[in-house]
Image (tube, rainbow, N blue to C red; front, side, top):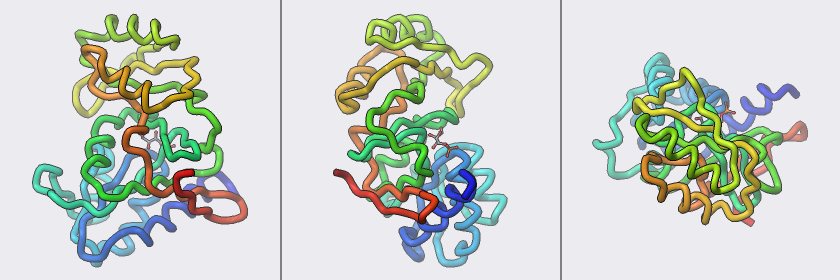
Length: 220
Ligand SMILES: O=C[C@H](O)[C@H](O)[C@H](O)COP(=O)(O)O
């Protein structure tokens, strides 16, 4: 199977977690896009969706799925999203598409986080994929210096502006042995809006696409 076929398979499997007549939180990226396309097939059986980015909002609406503002929502049974990396403890690195902050907010509201990934994303230690950090533009150089002190090599994603009007620093060369501690530490730097570690709020379930089929993983 191709990587896209694996992504499509996990996206379809995630439909089992969507609750009838309720809202579903929807992530961002190529795997989340397959989920949105699959969700279109059951749009009459859900109340609507909450989007984690403008791109996701547009794709949902393009399928005729009603999109709700998160501020109107006090109960979100499930959030479905991809990841750049995930470990067996269900800690993830996210933000390759720059949507990490809104993804983290929607995930925080959701009761259950269902992560959908192909098998290339499962890693023993997070950090092979550069860690995205969203920063206030004024703080870019300051945050970069602080991240370098943590042992990483930050690289400004030039020309990219997030949906929130901020910048992204991609931090290379980190071996993230304690994701919860590093997530907390980076959040303390003045000027950081959010970082791409999803460890304090890990996934509850990971649907892993393998050539042999979709495996369901829960935290080790
Ligand atoms: O900002 C983007 C998101 O965190 C994505 O979930 C992540 O980058 C994975 O994207 P993809 O499914 O395209 O690999």
